[in-house]
Length: 252
Image (tube, rainbow, N blue to C red; front, side):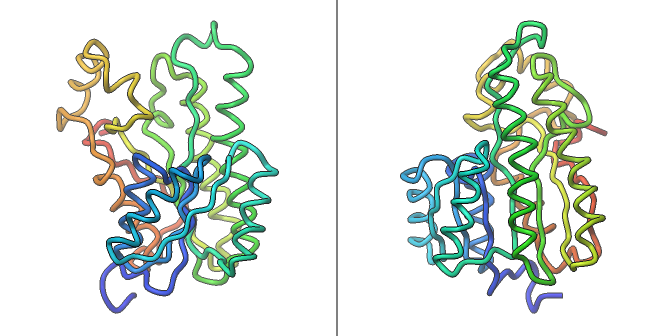
């Protein structure tokens, strides 16, 4: 175990989709616990804003842009990290796409591909490239969703892409255990983010969803981040292949 709980000093953490919402909260918390954080998302300016805020708070962070839906961009991301002398031993796959809300019968093929390319292929390829570079003791957390267990109306493809992430997490956990790398997932419930605004900004939808959550409220991004920190830390040394709900009791 670490000398103090959840200490990440000396570790380098790559967080995708870290320019806002849950990803930003995770990046800030990991930095507060001593990690050097690589803040990554599509737009460099937005990444740099988060990295600058972390540095202003006394943390260590760098910004590197990458579109996780494009394999060439992932290759470029790791090439840039290597050029900077940054080899992540912690990875948080958080970048996600959900461009369509409505019946799958009406969903266009382009929206389908965007969802799957980011949420499935992107997570798989970033994990592959990170794991090839990780040393013994590495840890990976995939941010999935409660939709992986309970598909939501209007979010069919997004939901089954998140179910694929849980299965992927288990597959990677089995394969990478021999290298001393742990792989787990976190399943956030309804969280107050711009990403989820189609739901969180709709009184009609909230009226249907909130009664299904025992705590009767949505989460804040900072309430999701501690679960990720725990699974990355030495305190979770004997945990791999799990999917941890952080959902106010929704899946209970």
